[in-house]
Length: 272
Image (cartoon, rainbow, N blue to C red; front, side, top):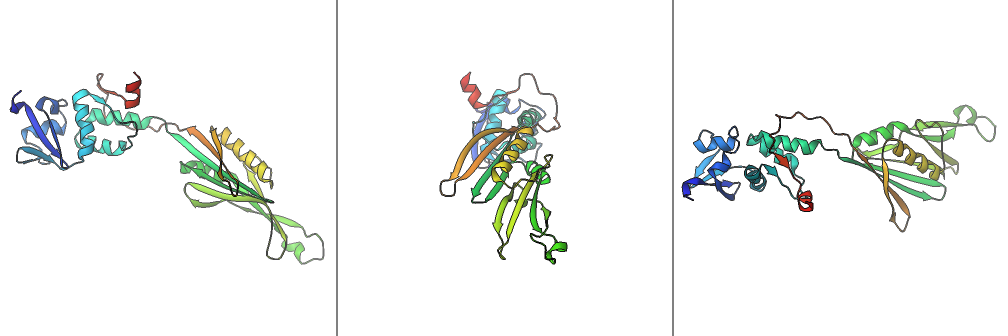
C-alpha cells in the first residue's frame, strides 16, 4: 500500500492513521470534505491534519467509519457527547443510531427510607426522576393536630382539636421528607401528625400503615419493588427500592437509517 492511500490525523493530541477511502465512507460528511481542503476547521500541521476535537471519542467515530457499526464498551455513558461529535462531523447515520439509543426506555428509580422510633415514624423518598417526586408531593398531605383557637380560651377539657394541612418538605428536586405519629411539644402537650395520600382519604398516624399506603401508591403507579435492606443497623432505618421503566420520549430523527448500519452493544456482541 502506498503512502498516498493513507492519511494521518491529530485529533485533540491523539494520532490516527487510516485510509482515504475510510474517510470518504459518507460523502456528505465534513470528514469527506476535509480531504480536498475546503473545510477551514481542519488544518495541516506538518504531515498531519489537525482537528481540535475530542480524540477519545473520535476513536469510536473512526471505528464506525470502518465497520458501519457502533460498538461501545458496556460501561460507556458519554452518549450525548458522542452525539455532539457526530453532529460536528455531519455523520447523520451515526446521529440517528445514537438517537435510537437515547429513545430506549430508561428505568425510573425510587427509594423509600423508613425509620420508626417510639411513637414517631420518619420518611424520606428519593427519586431519579423529579416528576415522580412532584407527583408524590401533590398527593401526600401532613395534617398537624393543634387546639382550636375557638375552644382554647374556654374551660372545656379536652380542648377541641383542628387539623392543619401541610405539604411534605422538599430538600431538593429529587427527594421529599415527612413524618407522622405523636410527640411532646415544648409546653408538654401531645402533638399528633397524620398523613393522607390521595386518592385515599384516610388520615393515618401509624407509621407502618403509612408505609403500606405509600408502597401501594407506588405499585399502582407502575413501580416494582426490587429490594429491601436495612440502611443503618444502629437506628434500623429500612430502605425499599422500586423501579419503573420510563416511556421513551420522541426525538426527531435526521433521516432514515441505511440498511447496513446497525448498533451493537459490546456485551450482546460477546454473547453471540
